[in-house]
Length: 138
Image (spheres, rainbow, N blue to C red):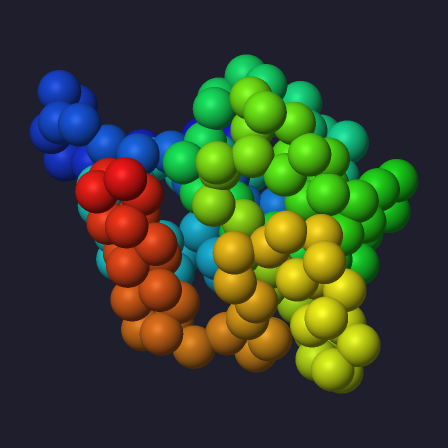
């Protein structure tokens, strides 16, 4: 699925991949990203599909659930950060897991940030804008 949040089709925009196996969570994240019209949103529903979408879309940022079938978000992040072609993609894990060990494991996988569910709409939009602005300056 692809959502075009940009009113001007010729405008430069970045691509964000939303990955969650729960359809309601995915839909909620898509709605939240409507606050950022300069971002083009694509989605995936599991880790394997996420890696396929990364190859197709070359996203600038990924909001990645951890607990998914087929391949966990930990494994997706580890693969992305271990590949020279994808290691610069910003990965933010968005998850219900919030134990210190989970945060540590996410950091070991190379995540750029970690957000616990439930997600606050304004805080998420602010974080995404900040991360993308940092990427643009790099």
